[in-house]
Image (tube, rainbow, N blue to C red; front, side, top):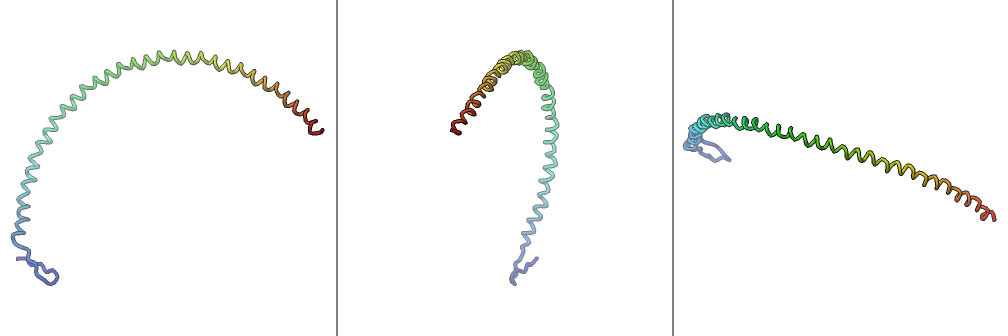
Length: 123
């Protein structure tokens, strides 16, 4: 019999509690059971057929490779970009509109006029 001393009083550890540890030793069978459960892992190894199936599904990727025609279509759509390049004429038009700026440069005569108006201040 094992006696534990706690705050001066004897607390006896029952011999039946030792049976708990003995019971846990018998529970090693649980570990033995889990070793038999390795069959689960063996089953998952057979499930590699799932991976083999996904390898056959590479046909999906092959399909997407054929879908490169979509990209080829977009390459033909470069005509849209070619159209926008022709639209550079819009920019060329705005360059001709620089005459507006040239006009405003001629409007500097307004400032020259205001400089002549300095005579107002002189007056």
